[in-house]
Image (cartoon, rainbow, N blue to C red; front, side):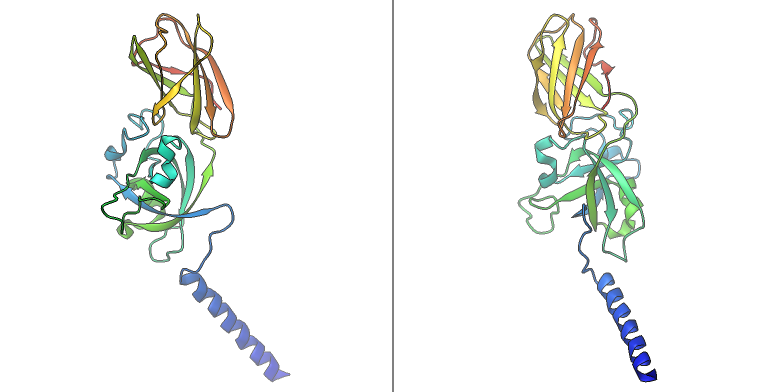
Length: 254
């Protein structure tokens, strides 16, 4: 009886040891609802290099995104349609480099591929990769790591205030930057309406910049914005009849 008890004790110790070794050697599978990717960082701790970018945003601090941002690889960027989407990210499967924290970031830029360097370029398709602002990377991993495996998932965006519309262009062409979008975050359709017109379909120019050739000068402007989850928010008379190019106007929020 004592021998059986002793054997059982050592069996359990051995089993627990094997489980620990399995966990530490990187043989984990991603938990449900999370996807595996890698993350690096660009820019300094001030985030200067993260401003502007391929989504069409400008000063990310003034626009409400702060430094909680990321550039996406080709596989995630989806030709700019993913701009504005939010991701929860945590370092994964690296005892040496991972920190015990998670971050939520908004997609604001593109990490371009380098086809002349097929090996070691993490932004080449079909790889899923996040090039984070340096402050965000250092929340989830040790700076010296440079690159770490991560888990990520889409999460709803939480923004302060309403959807913002920045009007650019000229009398022959109007370009609307849509930003500060909550919920799904990534805009897939925009319609505009002047006080003397019906709803006009806009086309996406690049990033989250939407365009029309309609002459709407001297009319108040309304917008219908649809995000990737199919939800639509209509903001009536967002811009008054005396709106100006370069002006920013605030509508309703998701």
